[in-house]
Image (cartoon, rainbow, N blue to C red; front, top):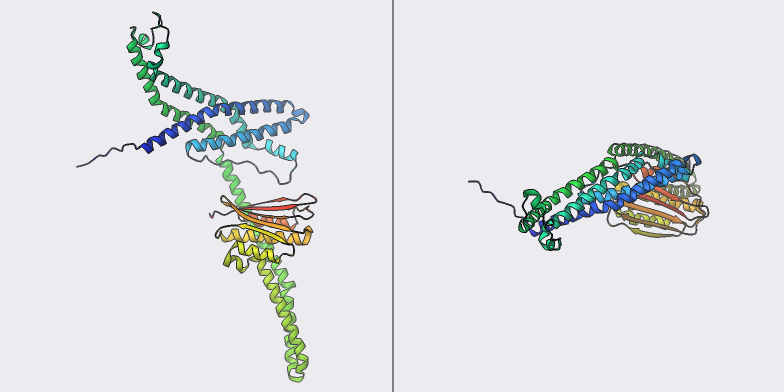
Length: 432
């Protein structure tokens, strides 16, 4: 025997369904003022910008219009994702060149395909938002008015022809009771269909957002280019690190070890005939070995110190701050351990930045902060030095930017003439 059980909606399910309906209604009604604002900005800005292009005033006007459309598109994406409960497909904006002037930024904005898609959505979104909002509003109010017809029917005019309502149109017969019954039943049916109608209107508006405010192909292409850039940066950083280690080993510990070997060979020859003259050579060999060991330790700190792998980023940054000749204020709020590549990159950013502060900044103090921001580790090094630092090709900070890129991070440098200099690295901590 097969038994069947019917699932009875619980009060929690009913409350959740009602909450979802009100969210959709709010989404549709809020789309009307948002659509009006976007339409006015898009049409007025585009018209003014195009008409003044010959005077070059139109370039910044168009760029500002596209920037405003981009902000409104962001609002539309977030509201659509909240009401549907699903993330929209990715989109992609072209990244402006760091340090570029306003003319270059304006031209970059005008040449961004997604910015024009945002502008087109601002134009097309107005009639769609107007239609969906008015349909939802009229349908809901009409259904509620029919359901409550008995409560306000008395206020209608009571003339002979005024009694001819919906029932009279359907049957040709006048009846007050029948008018009340027909309007009440029709209002109940309209309200029963209302949630499905609202869901369809939301789907229509969300489809427009999905079609114009997302571009998965461009986003995937940009992501592939980012990964390729990261791989090239990793290869470049690895090659640069190997060359630096080879040079440092050749100029430092290797020379000292060669000198120590020569001293030990001379000591070995003099031990038999003149032991007293061998003692200074032994002392010199010991000194050379200690200096070589110190240089090897310094080189190993530039790669990954044992304290980083043993005790984590907090302890490693504390050791780096203690070695700095410039006084350092340390503020690290990183609970637990992070992926090894992220910790190593963050440590390298701080040590290289503090080295640059000590060598070039003429600073009296520095501040190092490290904290988690959602799924990213944000590391910042600030000094009160002379400023003027930049990540141009051939400078040390360019290599630092390459190293940050290897873990899919970003590096930002703010260093006006006269200071202060702020170097900020943002590193994703979520492992792939």
